[in-house]
Length: 282
Image (tube, rainbow, N blue to C red; front, side):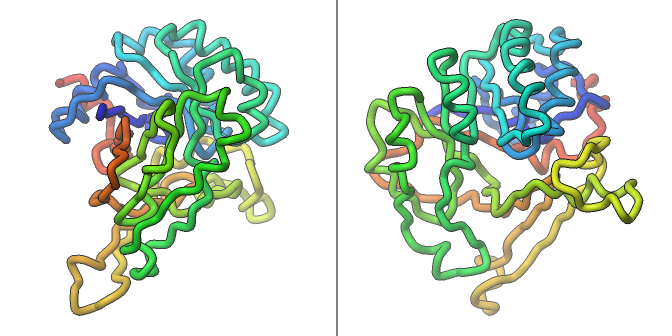
């Protein structure tokens, strides 16, 4: 089992420094060693476009020999042409990208036979609800049939820990499984609360609206008690709204005989709204 560093959604052009410094900082904070880095976005095409253009203009920040997975979100129609043009440019310029993760069938069909592809976490529609204690404590077998029509086009899948116990035994042995942790995405959508901060009232809460990446400056954090109120430690859940997406903490998961091949660590607590100038001292 290997560890990957998930920088999707969480690094921004306004304060981005060398990737090697970010990687080293998170390794020092967590005690983990990462042999892969994920860049891009699972959830927001506005973020993806802004970041991709910055990466193309500043390839020197990739001062590492660690392989990279490029993650592509579900792209809105107005952004589709631009994203399709950015993908090969990113791969050619950065030079370290050896995998591409896609999150919808359209992008899968567009890129298959061109790159080494993974199915992203948005392909898997398994129920996820931290508020229902009976659900989170049961063993869930993810529905892998979603990948079968295009199984010859992919190398693996990325998934979330939707409960405390996952049965991965039915997954094909010739494909690899990556699990996102310690945060599971609960829900996401095309309307971003934070993108509306500086907009006039009549333009707030529009799908896929242009933004200034306000998510780099603010997020919501809650601690909520669900289930048995006599066992507070077990049922107290951390909830983040970061960008378009709501996440909950779920870092203690059991698996059957089939284990994940890769764990993808999301450094939300380590990097959210941090001044990246701090990394210059590392």
